[in-house]
Length: 331
Length: 300
Image 1 (cartoon, rainbow over the protein chains, first blue to last red):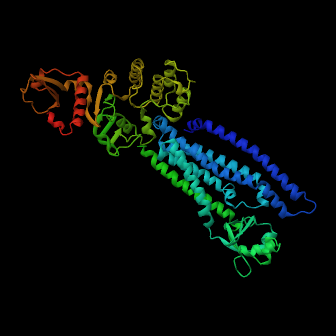
Image 2: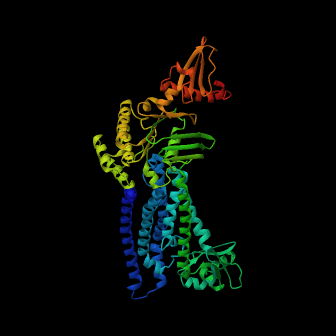
Image 3: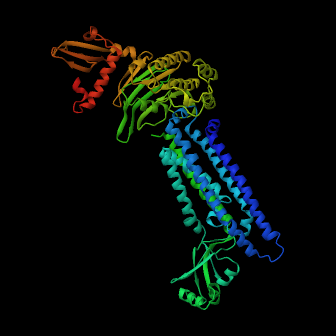
């Protein structure tokens, strides 16, 4: 059975190997570029060194690239679920070859078990290889900018991707057994997995453990260079993209209040502007501060393990459905 | 007595409201070469899919070689099944298929498989997707036979073949069966395909079993009675009237003698040939659905 599975999987395996090789070359190049930038700005820095500035520089230069790579890596398990797992079942059903192979001296449960182990294993290994490559390439960035807890980085590093890979594969197989047609099975698999990631990042993960809150003065945040954008309107002044090293700031839109707890409306900001005072100075003068909810850095691995466990539990559930379904025939 | 190759009781398969197979009781002895005939949509494929374990019955029981179909690897090893349209992996070569068979079957007969492919003149490196329908059927037959099963089941193996390939395939199959000493169940919507090779016959129509038994005995039990219109002798018990046909002057009855001996009333009545007999049953089955208000008994 292993031989047949490998023989049928040969083409996909070659494509995957080529894709991993290409990705490895690119990640090696990217990793070296990031390391060069890191060394030039921090290690070899002789005069007027400023870690905050170096961090900002590296974040600006590589942040978007790494974010896109993270998003791509989250998509990989879903794509493998849709393009490997689902057709692995439905193509047999559509060409009728299941009637050939299921009538050899091997039970359908064993047929499925070997398929799951070999192709599912390859799917997990592919994801793991890409995740490891990305983690290596991004290592200096992760140490310096330290935003690995944010959704796109979190799901692309460490243990979580392995769980997603297993889950995506089991989803593809189980959906295929129920839907029986390639295109619907692929579409449903992709939809389910995208929905899972969105739900996970926005609803489940922020609340896995009660988030902590912290109040920061505006002056501090500016001094550390941790505010990305700021805006003000009739409803008050709002910050976006505030970061805490290593932690995941959950509050998306952060309301700024002054020392007396009052909202800082746009009229106050306009008044400062009219006097030629910069907004930052204006807010600092008002003793502005803000409160955010966040998941602290030391919870990172706890969250990784929880997420892996959740994904594996769902994988087990879906696999159980598949094994329940397959001997009952597809009638 | 050995275990029966096929034993069913009240076997029924429904797909939603559609009944594909209704209340079938069958007993087929070991060593039989069984022809399963009936029009398209009669339930032949459903019966064979149930026998191969690809699907499960809605109700009733089915045992193949004394066990539930596809119950475990040992049971699967005892039954060779060639599905309709003889599916093979288009992307794999003939050699790959034989290797597949070797890997997946403990009793695989390498010599038999290799010799057959050679005898058929097939190139082992040829992709199965490039074979003709006849060659594909032969490949499927080779895989099923080299598995060395006790029972071979074929679902319409020759339906897609031209008459020449059809004949060659059946010829080949029978040589095989004689060599390997196995039981066979073979379905076709054409009686001519199976009557030459089978010693047992099952007639399915409208999802129901019409008649089943040994071919010779079936022929021996069916008679045609012709008499003046309306003036037929009273038939003794144990004789079923299958069909009645009136012309202006005479009445023709097709009857089946269910008893062990031929009663005097039937001694001089001629037998039907197999084809007429099967057609009679198919007509009767079709009639029961066309005129739903007239039950089968109305003919009796």
